[in-house]
Length: 512
Image 1 (cartoon, rainbow, N blue to C red):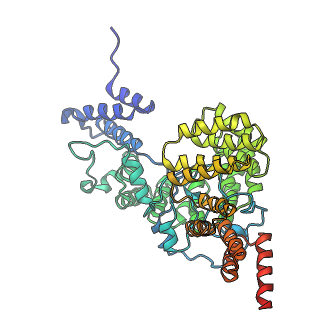
Image 2: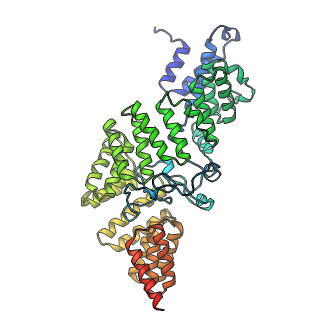
Image 3: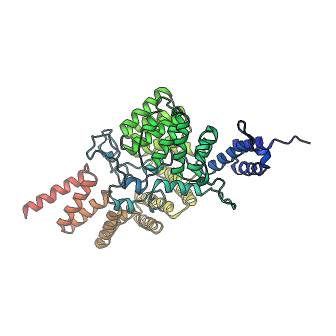
């Protein structure tokens, strides 16, 4: 006959093993005991311990790490009242990443987002589509990897992520925050911290969380750094970028604190200051992977790919299983015309247990450009099998179309690009490539329609504008050709063919 475990210790064991549902249920049973057994005026009672533990368990069920999920909504981008310099110095702004002097890849080599950043090797919310400059662009631009529906605000993002795992209570919420005497709880630091996390993450009630943090800070005589950080977090979530609450505690230099200050500086479009902050952190904590990875991300967003690659290599020296660093280095190698080396990085991810359509899609491309044709179609077949939605299948069919163009089978390429549009009707690159195939068949009007659609869907791409300029020039419509060539030059100022076409058109206009 075994010994029975004390219920509160059993609940704590569940919490440590991340079995939050069982922990919450056991704490609820303890809280239903007789009041005479619960209350204890001296110190912390078992009742208070069970209450605090259940609060923490409920919080962990819906916890969202605000450091990783940093996705700005339309409200944050378009209604931001912070003053930003209109003309930033080169290499000092994320809104104009093309001004970086780091020798980033051109759009002719590596695809770019609407804001001018190169496509990264690892999907992150903040790099999906950049920072639209107008409300119309913000509404039209996809805000996530899988949907074109814009997110209205970052706080709404936290609610949607949290409710996915939230457990509904038939008797109502565990804590009715509106009825609490916050000043009473603020006098008990341990209970107050558990209550703050519950209010901020579980209830998403920033106002009451801020009130509790202010009262607790006052009770601690403004000496507790933890509460100051929470006040800064509340202000950040309501777009009040008051960095003072973070800077007051900068001497502590905890990693998470650095990440929060770095987020504020990025929101203020001060990447150089964020870089300096990270490097100061590395002096205190050399080899800290989170800080090194943060530096690499900033360089990548500033289009300084060579510096980003160096820091990602440094990440792998400290942690050779870091998926983001391996994926980004593999992507950089592929676009640097080194598919064989990129293939080794992607195979490493496969050995680590990463098994999704993106990986097999990249493996298929690397195998094709490395002339390992026996593995190319097998990888794409596996990618199609693992694709979970139509957008993912569209990516695979688009790459298969490129493979078909590479082997000279234009009929197969045409079918693949058509299948791309069947799965995703807004695929601008597929429209552009179909237009080129139609031009080769002599179908001028069809090609023109495809190119107009592509340039409307992706105005930041130079290829549709340039192809439209070439097509118009061939049929004698020099005015349209000149206008399209100007748009191509605006999207990619360094494109030599566009510059030569504009020069030829100007000479023709001068002869008229």
